[in-house]
Length: 172
Image (cartoon, rainbow, N blue to C red; front, side, top):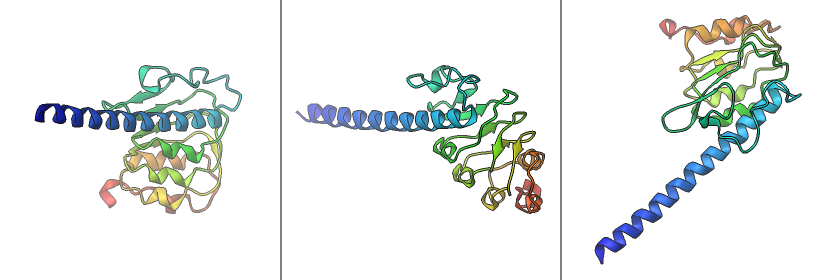
């Protein structure tokens, strides 16, 4: 009798965990779809970024996942993307690397990137981004020193660029 109750409790717990993981996966998929639509408004450069595909199963070009099945890297450098970087990217909570350099992205860098506490690599250089780098990004302890250089070469037209860049780890 006790074993049956234990088995029932474990199965309920397992179902709850699976439902929670599925919700997180759906949230990441929504964030990726919003990111893809903003980066590639024509939909011609990222045709694999479509609803119903598995981002961690190779369904999304340039997306890599960690061992837990969460999106860890988005690598779309040099793809000719000419859209914007949306705040929705903050929905990729396990993101450690965002590589969007050598494109033609425009607009501002969203301050919501600062919510990505595990983000260590941020490459936005050689784009047409404008406006100041949000100070919140400069305060991110997780960003490595090269991220500041990558941001500074992004053709951003603002006097406060160097003030808001992440400081190298040796200066912290």
